[in-house]
Length: 287
Image 1 (cartoon, rainbow, N blue to C red):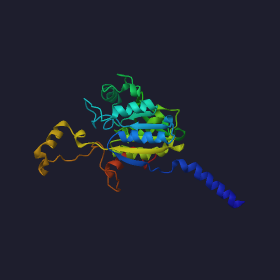
Image 2 (cartoon, rainbow, N blue to C red):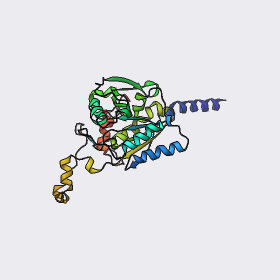
Image 3 (cartoon, rainbow, N blue to C red):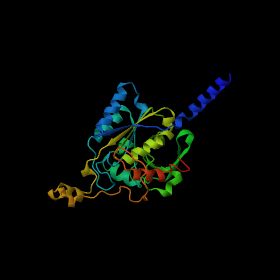
Image 4 (spheres, rainbow, N blue to C red):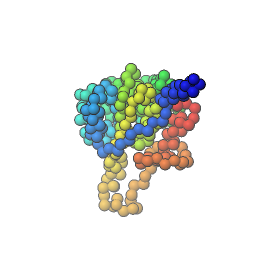
């Protein structure tokens, strides 16, 4: 009798804590958004309903060829065909941007490219700062902006300490507050963003319901990630000489230095990843 009570107690505790176990998402390096379409098609062919699939897209580097916010923007290869497919199938798609001016992103990178109808955005609308309670029993507090199905989200507890809006894992909860998905795909050209999505996902409502997460790292051609002047130099014969090579730079210069203590794969920098962990509250009180 005593052993049966102990077993029942342990089982109950495991069940209660199962939702908070670390998640290791499947991460796939891709060359084109077409590979995400193929993945969704395969899910549909195995019987997964369209309403059970959610997709979180980055804007710069996934929707647009440009990896930084500057005008004008150009559409990434095959993104229009992919968006049309998702819309026809009834797949839920959101854009989660890490940049700090959502209105500028919506107007100059979504509306100007003719994509507003895919994401129900209101052109020229000034987005108001909002507070959100998301995740398991609303335990995660976020702050950010939303226009249609385009969002920018930060940790409310550390809102003033960080620049980038990297809480992308919660984007589908913000846009579809009454929905729970069984399959979520995150698509980003930045491995830092993907790492934070993976870190945050166990705290989402979808994860607590047993949702699976697949992360797609869309590789960016070097010409898309450099200013036009750099591309011109890169394509010239002189650029092949070591003395003329373009030096690499810190992608997040506004964040303070930190000690490298751990190696991360997928071409990510442990320095930058740990900076994001610090500023998003990992390892401290909060999320």
